[in-house]
Image (cartoon, rainbow, N blue to C red; front, top):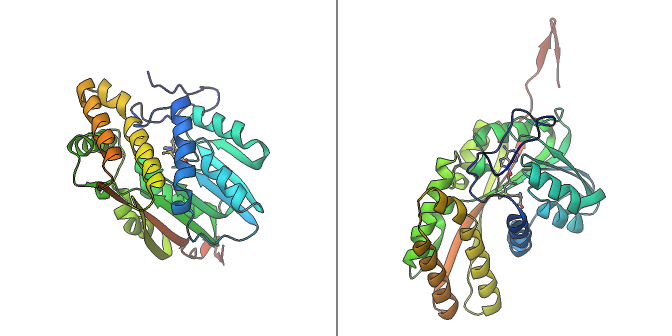
Length: 293
Ligand SMILES: C[S@@+](CC[C@H](N)C(=O)[O-])C[C@H]1O[C@@H](n2cnc3c(N)ncnc32)[C@H](O)[C@@H]1O
C-alpha cells in the first residue's frame, strides 16, 4: 500500500508512485517549507512578473512556493495543482484565501485552454512520468502571450570538493531509486529539448548555482543542513528497498559532520531555469471555415 492513499470519491485513477523518493507527512512538509525559504533567492532571482494576472504552480507541494510568491507579487491571482492528497491538503490549509489549491495530475490539467498568464514548475518534472506531457499541458493552459517558467534539477552536478565518499555514494543511490520510481533526476539538462518538443518558443535556459561560500559561514551551515535533510528525505525508501543499510546512514551523517567541521570543503550544484512561451496556435478548420484560436 502506498504511504499515500487516494480518496476514491475524489480521484480514482491518479496516484503518485508508491516509492516517491521524498515520502509524505509532517517531516516532508517541514522540509519543503525550509527548502523553499532557503532557496528563494536562487529560485526567484531575476523573476520579472506582471503586477497582476493568473499564475498556476503545477506540483505545488505544500504551498511553500506559492506563499513566497504571494508575498513578493501580491497582485497575482494564484492557483496550485498537486497530486498528493496530503500535500494538497497542507497547501490549502497553509495558503487559506491566498491561493486556490486543486488536487489533480500535472499530465492532465483540469483547466481550459488559455486559463493562465503564467505557469510554473519548481522541482516537479524530475518526478513526472512524462515531463514533456506535463510541459505540453502547461503550454495549453497558458494563453499565447503568457509565460512558462520551469525550475528543475540536474543532479549530475551535485559535488563536494574534495569528494566525501559516503555522501557521493548515497546521492548515487538516491538518484537511482528516483529513476526506479519513474523519475528523472537529471531532467534539467533535457529541459530545452523537452520545451521544444512540447511546443515552446522563445526558449531561454539559465543555470542556477547553489554553492558554499567560504566567507559566509552561517550560510554554509544552513546549506549543509539543507543538503543533509534533502538526502535524508530518501532514507526510508533506500533502507526499505535494501539500497542502503543503517551503517550507510551513519557514514552519511559522519560525512556531513566532517563537512561542518572543515570549511575548506566546498559544495556546488546547478539547477536549471527554463523560460518560454507557448508557440502560436495553428488556425483550426471548423466545417469549412478557418478560425484563429
Ligand atoms: C519536490 S516537491 C516540490 C513542491 C513545490 N513545487 C516546492 O517547490 O515546494 C514535488 C511535488 O510534485 C508533486 N507531483 C509529483 N508528480 C505530480 C503530478 N503528476 N501531478 C501533480 N503533482 C505532482 C509531488 O506530490 C510533490 O508535492
